[in-house]
Image 1 (cartoon, helix red, strand yellow):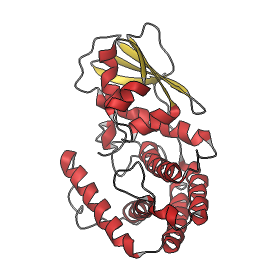
Image 2 (tube, helix red, strand yellow):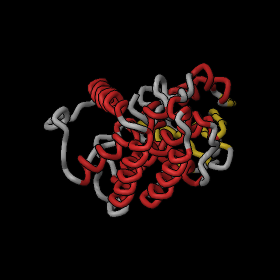
Image 3 (cartoon, helix red, strand yellow):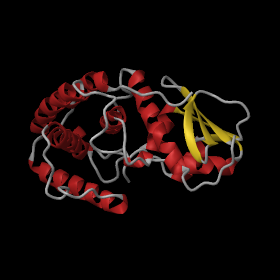
Length: 278
């Protein structure tokens, strides 16, 4: 069956609450720990979480567009450059804020974010399309889901850096993976196919699931569940899956952690799939 709508609106509040509880328990040294997010330390990721929550509230709830984006909808590398600039300027400015201030601000902003997303109609059209899914128009539930995956994976980067283990609810990761699967067809956009060609994606662990990439009607699509006669099967743990989709697993490592049977060439673009703007 086609991928169903994934409604994450009620998941923001408990997820953000768990992130805030962890931040309040961190020591000063924890805030300076390196993370899997490139050059960002824990404090930089927290600053980024605060920034993205405030930006979402500003442009979506309040209709306020920053000067750099007003009247202009960047795409492709222009979009990547804009996002990189917004991220860099904010994390640089946030260096003047203490961990206590950052935590308090994020607690307030994330509560307002949860309040807001819970009011949204999931079936309406999104204010911004989900670019990494190759869409120019998106349903609002997918845009909300994109925001949820941002919060979850950055929260996981913090937990990874301070040795806090996984989040308490594996259903949150299951929702993240369900949203991330929308990036797979875009990764295969330039891959030739034939009617009926398919590949199974098996994810194991507490957030396990099975999806099938298939070629039909001249394009690639992803269905939930298994199919018969796949040309290849890619199997990975849920921990590997989120790191792969959120740019925290280099291709050479992915090749050793993702088990492929059948047509290895068909599975190769999966290792470069990213459900984030990179």
